[in-house]
Length: 449
Image 1 (cartoon, rainbow, N blue to C red):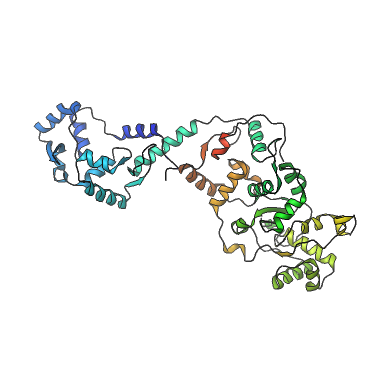
Image 2 (image 1 turned 180 degrees about the vertical axis):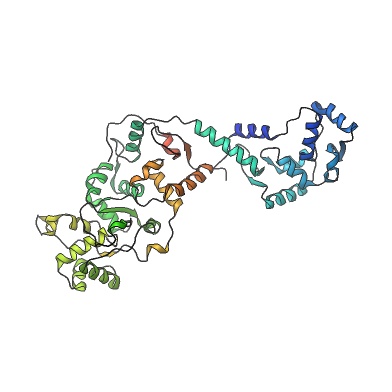
C-alpha cells in the first residue's frame, strides 16, 4: 500500500549486484543459462560471436526482435514463465509492461507467467519503488536484500542521544515537562489513552501522575470520564505466585490502572488469576456475581455484612483485581481513612455512599482469551515513544520481550516505526514512533515520575 516503500539507492545497488557479472565468454554463457533470452548488447558482441562459433549460443527471434539464447536453453526460448523466472532472479522490482516490452512477450503471456511464479512463492507483487504507481514484481530473495539494505540505511540516519536527553524526551512525550501539559477533560482522556495498562499505586494516580500531566487538574474531570463510561479502572495484573496461598492484604500501594472501555477486552485478557479471599470478600463477591452492579448500601444488605466489613471486602477485591466501580470516587472513599470514619466536612464527610456502583471487573475468566501482542506493542510505543527492553521492567502486563520483538520488527519492515540506536547506555534493539524522532530533545528542567 506504499507505506513501506524501499530506498531507491538500495534498489539500485541490490539490482546491480544481482545482475550477472560478465567479463568473458564463459561468464556470458552462464548468464544466458539463467536469463534464457538476452537482447544483444554491443559491449558483449565479441563474446556472443565467440559463443556462436563454438555452438554454445544461437540467435532466436521473438516478436520481431533478436535474442541470444544458450544452446542448452533453445527449447525454452519461447517459454515466458522460465524466461521471467530467470530475469526476476537477476533484477530488482519491475512492472509487467516493462518485462513485456523488454522481452517481446505478449502482455497476457507475461501476466499468466507472473501469476504462476507468484503461486510458487518465487516472486511478490506490490509497490516497492518510490514514485512508481504501477504494480511491481520482484523476486522475494532480491526483495529481502533490498529491504535489509533500506533498514540499514534508515538506522544509520539516527544519532543516539545520551540517557539524560532521553529522560528529557520522555518528560515531553508524557506531558510532564513544563509547557507540555494537556488541559481539561479531553487532555485527561489523552493521558489515559497513553498510560492505559500501566499500573501505579492507587493513592499515587491523582497526586503524582495526573496532576503533573494535566494543567489545573480537578478530580471532577476523572469522575466525569468514569461515570460517562469512557474510562474504567482496576487492577489488571495477576498477583505474584508467592502470595497465592494467602488472602490479599489491601494497602494504599495496591496497583491499579486506568484504561479506555473500548480497550478493556484485550487489556483484561493479559491479567487475572485465582486469588484466595476472606469470608467477607467472598460474600461481597457472591453478591456482585448474583445481582450484578450494586451500590454500597445494596451490597451491605445482600451480603449480610456490616458496612465496615463491606468496605474492607471491597478494598480486598479491588486489590485482587476482581472488582471496579462506575466512578473513581468509590475508590477515593476507601483510600481516605477520614472519610471511612465519617470525619471531615462537605463531600469528605460521606464515607461510604459514593455516586457509582460496584461491579465485577471481569465478566469471564481471563484465561479464555489470548494476549494480543501486537496491540501491546502499539500501546507501549504510544506510551514511551522510544521502546527498548529495559522499559518493560515496570510494565506488569507486557508480553515477553522476545514476543514483542517479532511484532516490532514486522512493524519496522512495514515502515510504520523506525528501528535503530536512539539512546546510548541501553542494550538490545530499539524502536521509535516516527513522531518521536521529530521531537527535538532540548534540555528541560522538569523531573519525571
